[in-house]
Length: 240
Image 1 (cartoon, rainbow, N blue to C red):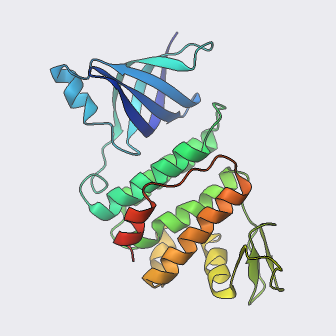
Image 2 (image 1 turned 90 degrees about the vertical axis):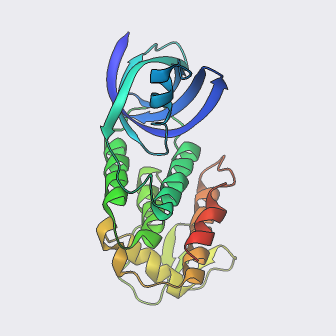
């Protein structure tokens, strides 16, 4: 059947000279893999240029419940980004987030709250002029709640964060998978602020990189199948 839904691009691969497979997270149908044909035509080449990480589309898809791969009829940009395509900082963060979502979101179950969170995050990132170097950390922390591994903030001072239990603790864990109090304090703050407030976080490049690596380790400890992030090194280099 022909359906209409908003869709955010997570990843795409060329399938042939004239087609590609796009992996979307959609508002109405969750994660979908969609065959896009005709990209070698004049109209298709223009449309192919739209396939950039986290672009938000209005789509018409031939949807079949009994198939894993669906066919695209039409799409158009539902939101036209201004900064993400043209600024290396915005682009790098978008690429990282799209790769994270592609790795973590597996199921096709509909989750309109998750879709809304991703869409609003993309628009917020695109509109940001300050604090961009911290946005990926905020997104990683905020997304833990939707991934089912979200920690609960603490009111206590000088705590460690035990990555195995996902809890803040006053005692240093007896294993190596924990955050020292300085990093735990930043994590606790990230759990409680909005994306617009990340500009208030003061971190050195070394602190930022260390926290990024530990947050990704936290994901890998609690979610199976998390692959090495290819965009990670680019992010480190840009925000060091």
